[in-house]
Amino acid sequence: MIATLHTSQSGFTQAFQAILNRGQEDLQNAQSIVLPLLNEIRTQGLEALLAQVARFDGFAPKNLADLVITQEECKSAYEKLDSKTKEALHIAYDRIHAFHTKQKQKSWFDSDEHGSILGQIYMPIDRAGLYIPGGKAAYPSSVLMNAIPALVAGVREIIVCTPTPQGYANPLLLAALHICGITDIYRVGGASAIGVFAYGLHEKGQQIMPKVDVISGPGNVFVATAKKLVFGQVGIDMIAGPSEIAIIADSSANPAYIARDLLSQAEHDEMASSLLFTTSGDLAKQVVSKLAELLPSLPKSAIATASIQNRGAIIICKDLEEAITLCNDLAPEHLELLFDNAFTYLPKIKHAGAIFLGANTPEAIGDYLAGPNHTLPTGGSAKFFSPLSVDTFMKKSSLIAFSQQGINALAKPCAHLAELEGLVAHKLSVLERVAPHDSHQK
Image (cartoon, rainbow, N blue to C red):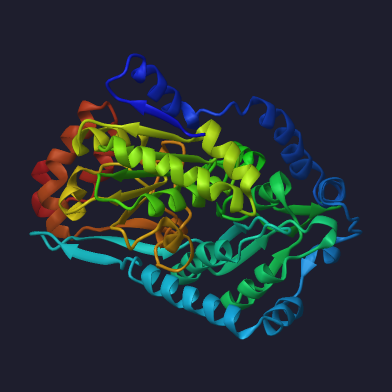
């Protein structure tokens, strides 16, 4: 069952360091597999892609058209949904769209005392590549969470790649793509998809698909490794690993809620991490008991059990401040605060992908339709990465428009700084623009 640690026990520092190292997954083996696949896509184009799809997905496309998922397929999948599923997907779409609409920043302009104009221009990227895991364990929520921010940003072209094992395209994914209005969809998965996004696609020396500007979307270790390898040639949202949850709770928390929420992450993957930080030894015992009671009844009991046993832990802390300090070191993907007056502790929370406050806010509500994005930094990367957002698909340019008065006023100090750096052409470029009546500045 789940391990229980006390912060006061001997060896706790080393044990917690092992937990912190969860994000330092050895990618060497994955890289040795992924790099040749990417190079094949880059150098051999469509020929390599068709061979890779046949190798990994179990069907044999003969040309690019065989990889296309049509609008008609997506529409048909949507129309076959029952009304309950349609309603749930539309509620999720509307809430996610409303939240992300609030994120979109506007360009701004200002002027200084000399009448010079300074500003920042926000604009969407031209092309986005969305990777959506597919097959029988596909998640339509991932379609909504990745597509909606790109749509709100105003991205001109959105391309989706999703694997279709044995040619099977999950109808829930297709229905979600129909709801989002995405029409450029391909039956390509894994590192192959990332290669197509990063390098584009050519056939017999002719480009048949341009590269994208930004890649987003979750995936397994091979997808994550591929994104890491192509970063710099294209932008990426983040390098995400296995899912994780941390819960901070005191004696007032409901042990059944905690157990359910820990298991909601554990069922994702044997490598998922489920951690409870609590000030109550009694609560810890109750949670252990509840986990033992609930685990056997889960459809994915074997996966959840392996996750809880190998990657889960209950950590008993002396107080909430210690628990928060440990969680800030952890920088978890999901952080639940299950104690009274949690809002007053928010300023102390420095690193978390998403924060869930109070007993009525299970992490799962954020996975589907709360509104904020569920694509979050993992493995401690919440210290420097942010959730997927509209900003992922936007870029900004600075605007500088100097007046004659402005260049006259600032030419001298600017020229001096250029001279200090030994850049004479910079200095002369500025001084050349000084008005004749201010020629003494030369």
